[in-house]
Image (cartoon, rainbow, N blue to C red; front, side, top):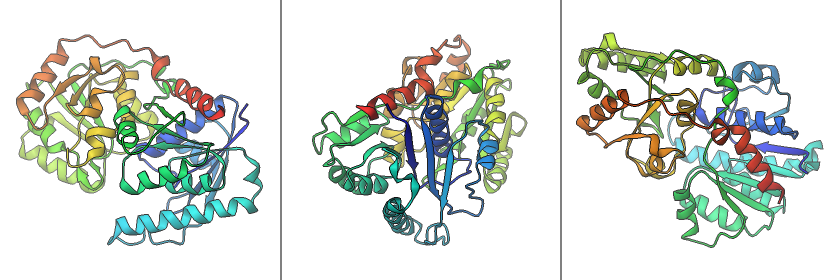
Length: 372
């Protein structure tokens, strides 16, 4: 029986990113399943806070847990140049010092650990701890760290999809130390039904990924070729992106049919989802993560909101749960996109079993796997 979990991550909180929302949502349901949680993370941004009331208000949760924000006197986030190198160096030193300091703190008695950090996974594994690592991407360094970490019989991995697992398992043997588990959704947030506008197309999330555009300009071209009854709403733009894409909408002469909003609270975003008709999954094919490894949190929120889903035809999208309900279009093919939107208008919204996509279901699977 698991009583306590240390959730140690190189993310920072509060933040508007999907990955931080996923972490907090996981913690919420770990607590709901009767497990105490301590969240440990670096205070690496100006807005970073280890105040529990601040996190509860920002993420709209009521659960109580212990929060430890550690000092981050490291280069990542302080300089624009050499950002990738500064991340690698800072991530390594923070992880090493944080795990080393576990020996001096009162939370060292916790038996189980959960992390999204490959370096935290490695250092905990060297100590022989019971640790589970949620793997979201494939890199050569991560491959090496996982291989060394799995020498610890208590180390385990969650892969977000089969393609990610396959790319690791093709390079070394995985035994009974892994589980493939796609993302889930906090279905409690969707208990109040909206009134879906079937002609409103919505995209939520950041408009760039890994510093590359997410092909939002393609969406504008697609909308421009549809009837005026179709509109597009985007939620998650930065101030600079808001100016850029507003200008682009004007150039495409669709400014009256496009609404661009900056990041909203989770509750506000869900309200907009429940009043839209079609959810969009789109990315640039410039990186393998978008093509093969992603398990978008927004997808599960689209399902929970009762939206029809239109997605670019990437392998990762093809293996999502309920992918048979997705209407696919070919990358950068305007006619294919328009046809997908038109097809969505003729489809009924799918009734998805909320239990199977819920975070509660996902967390129960994680706890069961960790305790074996």
